[in-house]
Image 1 (tube, rainbow over the protein chains, first blue to last red):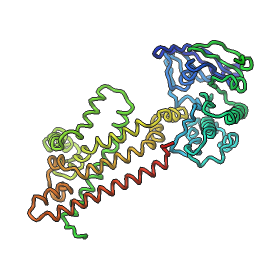
Image 2: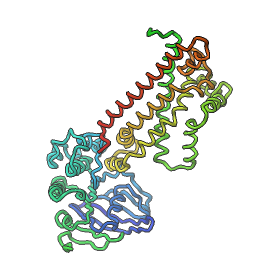
Image 3: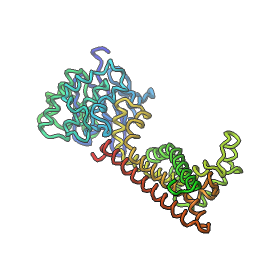
Length: 228
Length: 232
């Protein structure tokens, strides 16, 4: 991988009922924010990258790995993409302990050597004390931290985050944002971060892709995103 | 022993064996069918759904007669199985198990399908993004989360199999030691002068087994619920 290689290159067109998504962008290392109001198509973009949805046409590559190329008839299934997903509501497996949850992806990852060590991830995210607990006993912020750890331990080539702070109060949001910054800096994994909050964009992201009604409205530096 | 005659014990053990085998053999088919009906779209789905539920609404005698026509010595499938594998159902306890399994199948299918329906599909998606292929997703996420329904369905099928009478007696008759389960034995004793006491004893056994099955199902269910904390 050369340094000029974008962490992600995305181009997709998809029509679902009345909604047309027609988006193309590239994202670098660090955090790229996908910003826009609800209904802009942000989650659809993540779903296409993760393989949950199939675009009508387009091409998606993460570093130099092609995930989707409709012209070449390539569509990797989700489990072969090495794309980490942090869901809005964590989606932890309720029948497994926290430790089993975060080890889940490592069983299937490209090999233990590329996964970050569990104790380091647990330490960075402050979940060492939660390992034997069940998801049902965790608070919202704890669930999100576990979800982040679970995605990291699968050794993803890119981490997709779908409004991971939306269910949390202000104190927890701040705390998780600090952790996301640490993940960005310590684990060097590129992150595509979906949000409709300007504050999160300015604090976390380097670059921002502004989506509106299924199209790219603007692309720019996160620091230059207007206040309102 | 316990005042039961040898014939009564035979009927009790035969009933338990028939119901256990019927449930265990039907279970994988029920899980597969329930999953297919809950998750897949395919032509003829409604038809398949109805056919699988037919034993629930058809007179058991009709089911038994159809089994006789299909799996009996002269039946198309029965002949084939006998010639190819040496398996025979006619007038054998295996036939009783087949009849009981088919009669209990819809009950098991419904319970399992319901539990598949209630599983949050996004958990399976999450497992997929973590690298689990569809097979592993099913084994590690879907199946354990459906366990309460699977246990409940298996117990319902077991209970139904213990009580099966019409289809069994039509298909494999009422042969002591081979196909005479508790209900057929009760029927025989009622027909027999002076058999009331025996009929009553076996009736009590039936009630006891049903109660135990229900209690075990309740205990298992509580354990599983505590284990997977479905009420998150």
